[in-house]
Amino acid sequence: AASYAAGAGVQKSDVEAARWFRRAADQGMPVAQLNLGLMHAAGNGVAKDNVEALKWFEVAFRGLPAGGPRMDVARAMTDVSAKMTREQLIEAKQRQRAWQVKPEVK
Image (cartoon, rainbow, N blue to C red; front, side):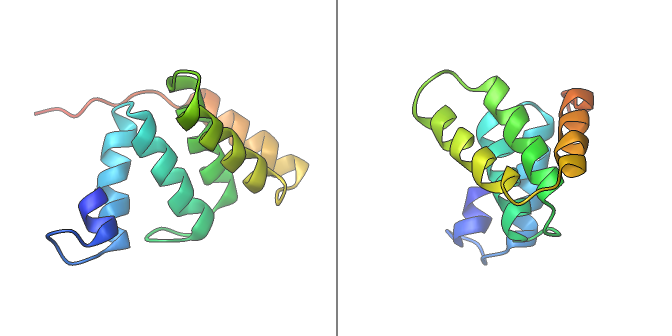
C-alpha cells in the first residue's frame, strides 16, 4: 500500500494505495487504519468522508500502544472532529463500535 501511495517501484496510485490500506485495515493493522483514515479525511483515492475518517482513526487509536503513533492519531481525530456536526460524530462512533476484524480467507 505504501508503495502505491509513494510511487516506490510502482506507478503512484492513491486508489490502489487505498485498496491495499483497506485490506490491511480490515485485518486489524492500526497503521493501515490510520493511513486509510487520512485518505478519507483528504479525499485521496477514496471519497472525502470525515465520518469514515474518524471511524478509522478511532479504530487505529484502540489498537496502538501509548506513545508517538497514538499521539498522531489523537491529533488527526481532533482535526477531523472539529469539522463535524454532532450527528456526524455520533455516526462515526457507531461505525467504530460496529467495526470488527475481517480476516482474509485464502
